[in-house]
Image 1 (cartoon, one colour):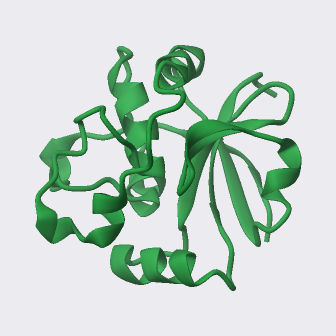
Image 2: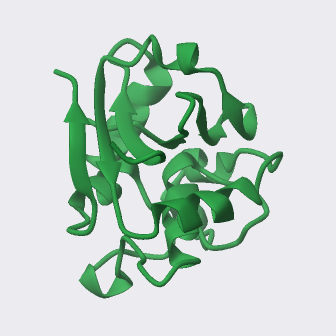
Image 3: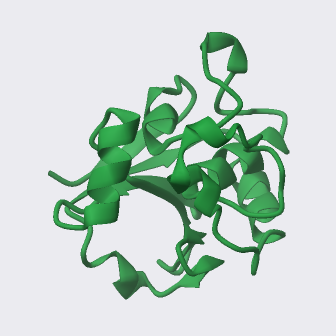
Length: 152
């Protein structure tokens, strides 16, 4: 198994997760990197930072992925440590915020941006994706990653 992966997850009972799923049209509500030691790194409402492996205990569905340039993408994401959460992404796509601005991050924006810093981006805006927001569902639709593990 690769040392670093990223995962797309959900929790069924959380109202914020429910709103993200409803708005984005899929089962997924969060995305983050999984580091070699089992800790995670990503954007949550308290900002972009590392979290203990135990922070994933409330996830009810998890799919972990490998992709080309994973280590380079994770290294790029780590440069964003301490940045605030992108609440405008939650407030609504209508705010027309360019998700590539690196002053704050929504979880899947951070993953997509990190891969854009490598020779192997996960997404192409040529496939109908707008600039306003990248959702966890969009990451699931990318043909690039390879699933390595899934929970029910």
